[in-house]
Length: 108
Length: 148
Image (cartoon, rainbow over all chains, first blue to last red; front, side):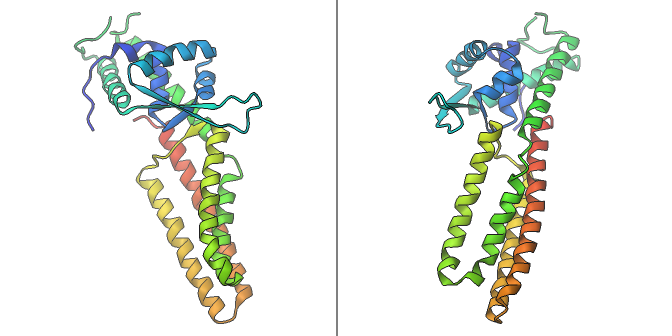
């Protein structure tokens, strides 16, 4: 599928862009992996994930975890089809800008 | 933040690449994963020498063991990967075909009464599938690292 370069303001916030970038390269990530890779607190990750989930770009599922001792379940996160599409378009827009081409609707 | 400038955008793209590299490092499989699949293949190939009861149950047990190994890998790394690309599917097909060929050899050996020689096919299956599983996971991790 060819992506059309178009900015997405929801995705463009740096933390959300990085979350989407990580999720785009795999099928799913444990919440803790995202938090550790970004090097921020649970609360910061949760805040940005909530925006992405509300926009329909990220889906969440819970799974039992034998490795946890506090009875909480592992939270798995994935990009939805809409999220993949929006991220691909946004990434294409970033690449166009990086190559020196203006993008309609770009922030700045 | 000024994001319509090529230098600012390049910095964002570099961050995305760095995150992918971090994930790829984290997705590297534990040492037991490839030998685990090798053991499953060896158990599958040795089946004909174990008698009728084992012949039917071993394929089912092998499948369950493979699913459990993948689940353990996901839990150990916190990363789920199932898109493996053409190279990955080719390696997987090679492992399946290789195991089936070795299973046929095991059946042949048992039909000639050479039960103990099945150990040789099991060792070959272990070595082949361990090697292919290593290649398979390396290919999957490489896809995580690579730019789309």
